[in-house]
Image 1 (cartoon, helix red, strand yellow):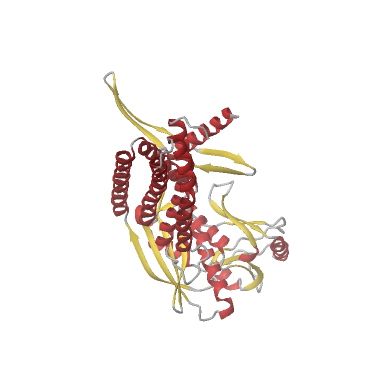
Image 2: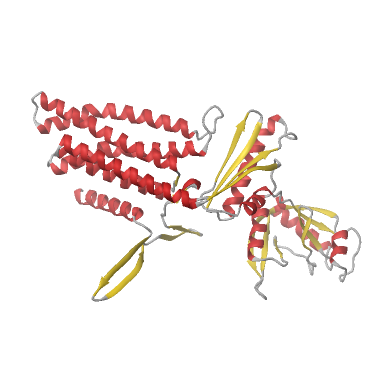
Amino acid sequence: MKIFRYAFITFIVFTILWIDLPRSIPIDIGLFGNHIKTEIPVLELNFQLGEGRVIRDFSTQLGLDLRGGSHLVFQTDTSQIDAADLEDALQSTRDIIEQRVNLFGISEPEVRTIKSGDVHRISVDLPGVYDVAGASQLIGQTAQLHFREEVDGLSPDASASAVFNRLTGETGLTGKDVEKARVDFNSNDGTPQVALEFTPAGAKLFAEITKRNVGKPVGIFLDEFLISAPMVQQQIIGGSAVISGSFTTEGAKQLAIAINSGALPVPITLVEQRSIGPSLGGQEVQKSVASGVIGLGMVMVFMIGYYGRLGVIAAGALIIYGLINFAIFRAIPIVLTLPGVAGFILSIGMAVDSNILIFERIKEEQRRGKAFEVSIRLGFGRAIDAIKDANITTILVAFILFNPLSWEFLPQFGLVRGFALTLGIGVATSLFTGVFITKWLINVFYKQKK
């Protein structure tokens, strides 16, 4: 049984170290007069799960203030929305915007609603994206997809403008009937195109449309712009279609995103836009890391100087705490912002508090004349209640600041939430390391039995 326990502990230790390692390890050495400079990539998590594949590289995700990118604020026009439907419409708009930026491939975007009096706004942070105009256009477009047919007969050799003017008959088939749109490539010439998969009802309607329009064009419109007007060669069944045209790969990708996300329930207007450079973020990361290292070092020196051997154990537990916490941040993953880094550094102090409470209780028992072994057992037992109360209280405060239910009377700003999230995870981790890890280290070094 003990072998399995040690094997499990070893597995956990190696997993944490693997997650914490840089994604590539640089090597720059001189050997026998030769200079070797290379990088060793760290193994990524990559395996098949059902029909999908899980790929994770456990890299550190940096927020807008550290990585740079675009910050956009849109004001909503709710004048035409009933009061009873307002919250649902705003939430749906926020979800569609988030879906658009996620499908666009933006790493860790943050989309949130902000209310000030009767004014509702949607804030969008896009780390790593510096094309503010392009991002704004992608987010704000309405993307209403329509399929239209001719009202009157039209010869196949008619001009493009004539096709546009004749394709005015609504078929009833819209973007709501499209289950999925994806970028595809023509098997003949390799040009990009958008493949559509219809819902069961949409597939039935599309089959009827193509049946009555054999030899005629069917217009595919995005809002009021004609995207493509392919000539129907035969009835199309099976619920699939292709939008082809003079697409670039990026253009086809954005069209697929627009179709997948659908229309915005609430009109939005861009009222603020900012592009944040990565240089400031890089400097702040270095300063934050330096302050964290200095603070951690000072705490460890104090603990060792004041508590001696127990202080050494506390310093070891503190290092383990940092490794576990960083692994959690990478594994979830959590987007680190400057307030988030501050929350992590603050949680280090909370981790030290647990050790101080335990050690003071041990010293108190020793002053009463009890043996060291007995003092350790009693010290842990009497300190655990105070440690739990203090940490649970802090976790509750972090929960309120994070405001997961987006209550209006509580903070709703991303920076506050970033601070609360890292603080809450840090305190929960410190509760584990301060009690279990510290006790385990004392048992190992002092050869005490549980």
